[in-house]
Length: 457
Image 1 (cartoon, rainbow, N blue to C red):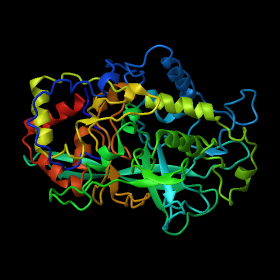
Image 2: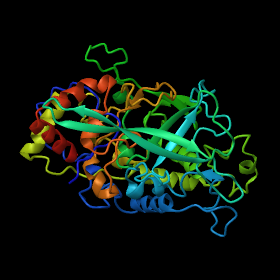
Image 3: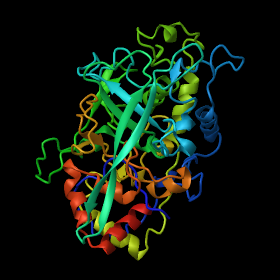
Image 4: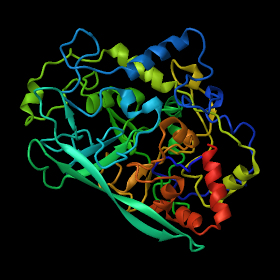
């Protein structure tokens, strides 16, 4: 199998595990864990979701996959696409509930990758301020009679490096270009943040973690002197109109799956909801504002609820080969390199109202859901609530060994620049630099063992 990795943070950490087998660790999602290594491994309901409680899951799945169309349409309830948008369905960016990727060829359009926009300053809710003309997200598609905002492309420059044993490697550094801008140049000081769609597995379990469990992992000022200063992001909760702990998104800028789902409908598909009732149009986009709507809101509350429920109950696949000697050796390398206090291996969920299946589960997500400074090379330079331009949320590692099987690519990190597991580790800086260097300086056999362990997750 081709080497692969997940996301933006395998940061430096310091768990004292010896790397031996812990009974039950193969059940990444506790009792929700499913046993599937095939192309649908990320699309299954929690194993303990039984009886008529499964019905709502499959209804949510149908709306997750449903393509939205321009209003007015005879397909009532799924019209209202746009006026500007990036995709026509949730599944378009999360193919088989997995990970998106940047364009594979220079002429390919952005689909699994979107670009957030903001200018210096802080919105009234404490979040970023979007471009006054193009808004908070670059939409390269539009319905008829409405101009798309423009086109985007990415090119790469190879950055050479060397392992401690003299073996050469090369990393690719992306540069983004925006052309055919419909309303002229971006505002002065514009900041871009390219972000791929993340895998959907286990999100409900992460939502079910008690806030105290997450906050207890934080060390804002590195009081223990280990070089790790993970901290929580606190963000605007639209429903309660309060500030709450951020859990979801590359910078932990969403407090709940309901808000994450509603925000994606609005920003990605251009569909309004109870939480986000305004069309995704700035005052300068007059044709956008004048377009026919598909209702008020365009996606009904019950549909948001069903897609949220679906997102909460997508199961994590069980680990594979978890007792193999090579895997256990790699697990020891993972801990010795200092990765496990950011990618926290074992947590226990609290009691989640209305969903007993994800409540009180022992899980192995390999994340602390905290923000970590990953250095200048991975920085997007764009603050997001309390997250700085160099900080990213520790991404879960569960399921990463099946990404190639499900999604047919091995592009990882927040913008998909890493072409495999090893490259993703080698991009780490800031708080992740010590772990990166530990990996870079390992003998080849130890590096291979660490990759084998990660592929078992």
